[in-house]
Amino acid sequence: MSTWIGFILYALGLLGYNSTVRRLGVSPYLAWITSMLVQILLLYGFAMTGHLNIGIQLVTYLGIFLAILWFILSIAKKSQLKFEGIHLFDFWMIGLGIATGNVLWNSPLVHYDNFSHWAVMVKFMTFTGHLPGAADKLISFTSYPPATALFITQFVHWVGFSDGAMLVAQFILIWGAAYSIFAGLRDRSRALTSFILCFTLAISFVFNVAIRLNNLLVDYVLPIITIAALVGVFIYRKKPILLCTHVSLFTAALLLVKNSATFFVIMIVVYFLYTLITNNKWQWQRIFTIPLQFIISIGIGIAPFLWWNWHVKQTFPISKHQISTQAYSKQLNGESHRALLKIAHKFIEQITSFNSLSTKGILLINIVLIITWMFVKFYQHQHNNLLGMAILLDIVFIVYYISLFGMYILSMPYAEAILLDGFERYMASTVILNLFIAAICLVRVIDHQQFEQNFQKRNTQSFKSALTKNIYQITTLVIAFFAITMMYSEITGTKFTNEMNHNTLPLQMKRISKPWNHLNHRKVLIVDPEVVDVNDYYAGYVGRYYYFTDKAVGQENFMMTPQQFKQAVEQYQYVAIPESHQTFTTLTKKTFHQHVVTGLFKVTKNGLIRIH
Image (cartoon, rainbow, N blue to C red; front, top):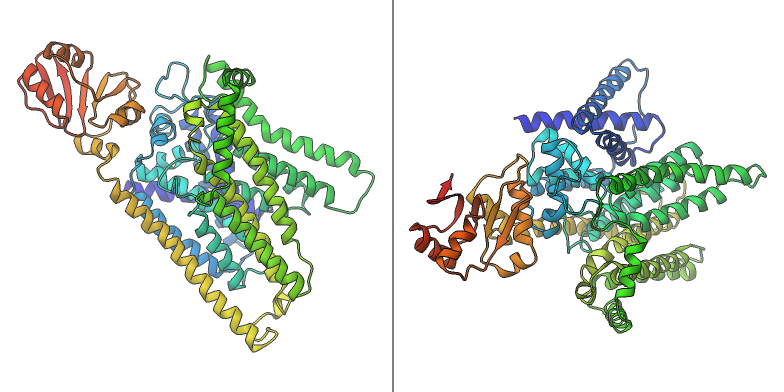
């Protein structure tokens, strides 16, 4: 019951911000993500000044107050919002969004990076009420900005902390940003173009298969917020104040999602500058106004990130994954030319392979855009910009390839770089972004091919012939079918993944004990028979997250004498055995005369005491 009350409070707060930004001129299709990003930046300000818990309550209560205020004013007919109508894509978004959210609510966290940073960061802020400091050794990647963690922390503050609650929070952020793509439609009543965008959204999850939605990683968050930013630049191009505010807000939020968001921010900045230059008829005053608008907007946008970098340098003497020119130079000088050539050869081999999912995505985008361009150009005899867009997107891919290769040779150890560790995951972000850009351009060209260009006159009779009407209707039904099927496939795929993960370490931990939610420094030994889990520190990270301690350690090798075993075990305060370990069980019997298989135990001088 408390979960539902918390969810209602959170939803009312979000609704209040949504109503406010809409009255300030924000598109209804961008209002949800805009409201979320405004709250993130407000929370960021409170967190950076050491008042996160108060900030969460104030930000949410302000939203609730605004929701009540606008409701009263609308009843009094003093401030009513224009009703945009309900369209087919609204039903698709609501129905499949609820279905996806329901699955995510019952999903566990399994991916390594959830426990090395993303989930543990949310847990830390939820139960301590502040950002990590130098003394908080639980957080390893201290330079990672906290935007998504702040958003998720606000949500779980009201509905309760759990794996599912965190996943649903991030999905709300993704779905709110995804709704913005429909602002790119010329005519939202057209079923064909609407379902093409729904289909594109469903396809985008295919390229996110390395991560899926049941993880807190931000590889999908980055492109979906970026496309919302680009759509906003397009639809606000004739509203200078709204345009500049939008760019500042989205730039600030993206840079606070992850350091690697810089590439996506550059895309927004370039398009923003292009829009400012080409926006209106040329006047001499624009020589001064354009640079001023640009500098102020981008300056405000990067200010929160500069504040974060200053915070990291002041708080942490050494920070993992911190942006450092000196570190990059040292890394580059440490690699031999032969090693660099090997990485380059492996990289080229990967991007030219037809087995690469990202390469398939790039080919798909190019084929669809070029074929459509040829059809419209040579068959319909109409000018369109799809070929130019295909070339532009290819340039983006090439630049991203170069930046990704730079990351491998500058930031990664050779052992990881030569394997192109995470290649498809990193490439997925730019493939997803360009997929959406291509789809929005495509549906606008398709809409221009409609026989009737006056939206008010469009109906079942406004077709060139009965044949074109039949083609339109059949195509719409086919696209709608695949849009629903592909999204349902993502839902069932997530369910299947959850079932396959039933015996993974995080779920085994849940079967032996309850999680600890009080930050502590207790020494916990995680006994794991899987060598790989221990060697790559997965067991340790899961233990640190689950028992909320910076001193959880995974161990698999217990080939030692009973005396050595006793000394080794007594170094810890607790022992967690999520899966039976034959050697550990045998040595426990010899040393402490106890039969131990699985469970959580307190270490004493006389042996292990089971904790229920």
